[in-house]
Image 1 (cartoon, rainbow, N blue to C red):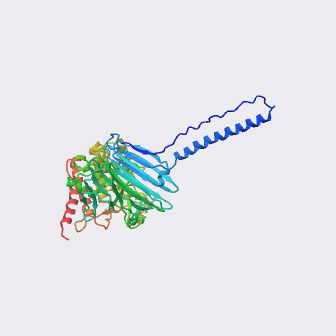
Image 2 (cartoon, one colour; image 1 turned 90 degrees about the vertical axis):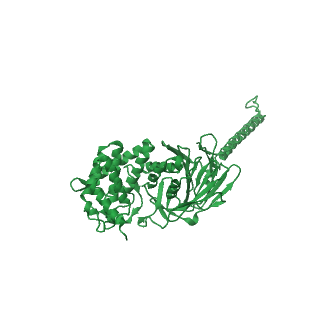
Image 3 (spheres, rainbow, N blue to C red; image 1 turned 30 degrees about the vertical axis):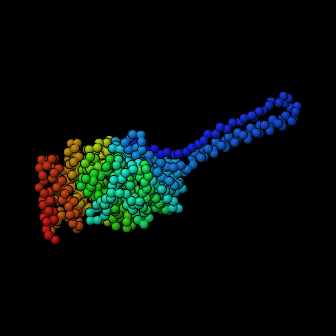
Length: 539
């Protein structure tokens, strides 16, 4: 694919010549004042003509850097002909962008940044190996509102089906066999040869620390028009003082979702980033917690866990499920690479009032469950789609994990170990240890050991297992449910455990232990049995 920005600037060359300009030499210097006067006049005429040449060249240069359309053509199948066009109109036409490209094994990121008078317009293109393109658009403004018009054109005259996500107890799809003139939500379009997602333009107010409040009343509908060559979708990217407008889409010549596959259709509805979570160029944003700061109703924060990426990995077969899952998994894997700290972990930016009051943990802390989930996603992604940069990110995380366990781990029993759920800045207190965090960390260590035979990972996993074994009875509540966590003094946290999360983690532990040690663990089974008994008790 060629994703080229074309500035259609025409500069007409002017053939400026000096014709019939003759300067006659004076025959007698110093003897004829009239001749001297004529010579001076001729010299001044030459200067005037020369200055005109300079003026014309400067005017042409000014025209060359003036307003020009921002047009990107997208060649999906590398045949030299575009399948899509992405065009922006407005103040961006008078600005030359700063362009940056980062190449990975399975995706190439190209960033176009336009800046002028407190306004920012960012285009991010993600070209996948299968030819698909993800685009992310962000228009931000610190001053007077000035919209940018974004037009996405699919050069395919046919539309065979459109689909939009519908909210409910379970998210589902509403499908149509034709197209509308206007759309209030994002749409998936299946044409005769092209398949694409056109996201709606959404307005947000940045609150800081990766938190954005959606402003639904400022969202605008997407306008659809058709001509002989294809279908155009026009979005108005409004951005007023202190607000921004964003959208994203996916363009391909292969089906995004194989609608005939019910499992793929259902999973795509569960993962789609339209209602309760959002997708941006730097990752997934989840509905904000009321105990987080900053917080406003309707706000979202960036969650580093990448559970959506992990859940996409079971649907990577493009022939069976469509290209949507592989495209999303690849983007989330590379955003994890881009957002990893130098220390090797991934930060949760908003401050949790609970953690702040209990342990003095502030903004930008380490949540080990979210980090373990993200590392597990990267590990599984790397197995099926190897890339040295993913391996490097995993190595950095593994080094951090081993150091974190050595620095913050608490000895339990003879040789057991607990690690705290959260790590804040210097001066914060050790946090509690929840069972689901501990088991997920142990599972990750065993998975790494089974993959590469790293004995240090097995030994640390065994120490976490020994910690659970030493406290087995203390995890079980009187009603057979499990306690959520234990404090550093091994006092149970009063909260009860999640309904299924920890139980499922423990079941997976047994699967791993059967491969690591050749047998399951009876103490873990006792916890599973107790939780199952509680789940089966009528309430």
